[in-house]
Image 1 (cartoon, rainbow, N blue to C red):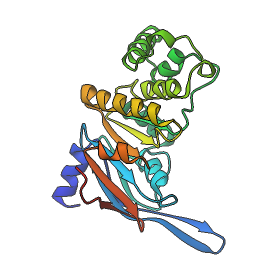
Image 2 (image 1 turned 90 degrees about the vertical axis):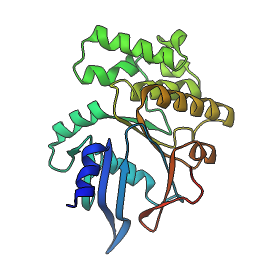
Image 3 (image 1 turned 180 degrees about the vertical axis):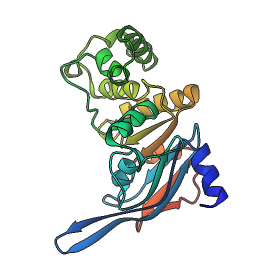
Length: 238
């Protein structure tokens, strides 16, 4: 390992090197990722763009330790993911990463506050502390009056804001987002984008966002495109 690579995975919140992923379809191996390298700095806002089927969600799942690469390495907060047991990986992920998806994946039987507190409770934080942290986060995303509402009683934009609050609950180093505004109307998507930018500015938490939304990509610090199994810097990106 070169000195530069060693420095990268020890100082970055998220780092991967030479990620490959292939799936078997019948008698053929279909390559999705063909040597992806990426380093995400503390506080950085990064957009990953690319055509449907290019492997963006696959890459995000591997960066989050939810799926294993066929080859290559991932580090989350300087810890290599591959040697971890499933339980250790889940614990590390809970402490250091947040996730937001196109569909909110809230638990329907629980209130907004209970949904946001869930990652803290899983991490064995005292219930009273978890609930207070959840209450503060829901206030931060403009839902102070909706803490007791279950997902069915919330609008699409409100549900996504609950999901964002939940992703921030453990104060992770990085939040991974897969089309976080993809299921929202344009006005609500804009509201959610402005919220994300505000939270990034205030918290210093890094964001990695897979998106088709050009408005989101244009507001990130860096934009990379995934095609032919590799990441490429986007010309003209900030």
